[in-house]
Amino acid sequence: MTPPLAVYVHIPFCTVKCGYCDFNAYSGMDNLKEAYGAALLAEVHADTPLLTGRTITSIGFGGGTPGEVPASHIRAVISAIRDNGSLAPHAEVTLEANPGTLDGPAFEALRAAGVTRLSLGAQSFHADELRFLDRIHSPEATAAAVQTARTVGFESVGLDLIYGLPGQPLEAWTASLNAAIRLSPDHISIYALTVEEGTPLARRVRKGEIVPLDPDAVADLYEAATGLLGEAGYLQYELSNWARLGHHSRHNLVYWTDGDYLAIGAGAHGYLDGERYENAAHPRDYIAAVERGAPAPRPALASAYRPDPVTAMADWFSLRLRLVEGFEPPEFADRFGVPLEDVAGPCLDECAAAGVLELGPRVRLTRAGRLLHGEVSARFLAHLQNARAHTR
View 1 (cartoon, one colour):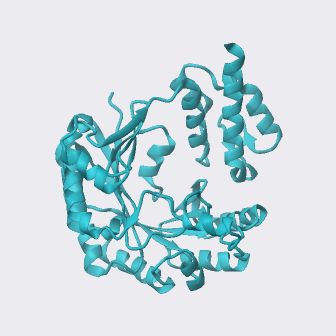
View 2 (cartoon, rainbow, N blue to C red):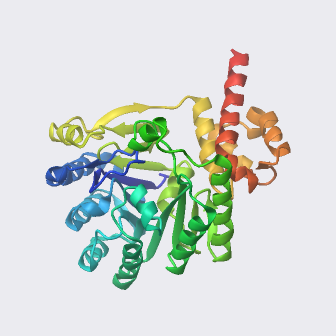
């Protein structure tokens, strides 16, 4: 039976690129939007062989800020995917947008285009924190955006928040959380501010202009969120994600459960039949590649590789551990043809003894272990690499 397929569509445009962001995003390129929209459609058509015979369960528009392009472009891409593949009747179609940049008619146009789920980049409910993050909206704009999205009939509305800002007190973070909860979104994602190399934020940290928040304080903020969101009726299903019943991100679950996803757009990453690949990153390079009529499918392909067995196992383990429910050991054996215990038994026992991993019918992080996901994943990879080295 042919497995289902998700489609990721990258929209690289932003009004302002935030100083902490290392995503493939660009400001000041409005003149490319029309050509980019045409290139997206051409890539979808070129990828028809990859869409044929697959049931498309979700489409995710990410960026950048997908809400910055006309709704007509979004509609055209959804229609092209539907025309060249088989879109499931109740497929989830998610789009990321910034509060304050879209009015009622714009939300209505996106809903009419086929978007079912909105993810709004609230980030904070404090004006000073928003300024630090280079966000151009106000806390009031987030509240208005949620209300407008409800009014026009979106099935699911989510908010993204950032924590761990330099000097951020617990009281400020919990105030943002409570403000988000009062808006009753269906989904809440929280992300720790990360200093990524090459960003303006990293340069300011290197100069000593900004001192990152102490890791223990960041952990305290995460624990506070876990408590508040749970008390408010949100179910944590992934390390950074909480949802009301039935509102988890079906698209993102594809990433975490080893599902196939097709990449459309500049710098988009895909995963098909065990191969990871990415498109040309810069919008101009992407447009040029598609316009040249490069070999189809994947006309904008920049690189592709098939992970070796150790890397594939480590990737699978790390991604599945992001889910609060973890996984059943036979799932690993079904995927790789070898029992999990045989390849990593001692490593798993050490993590369990340290109180960060739960073993049994399901393998999953303990509540304390959720703060150490990276360390557990790194230890698992190191164990596999050492085992391989000793068998050569």
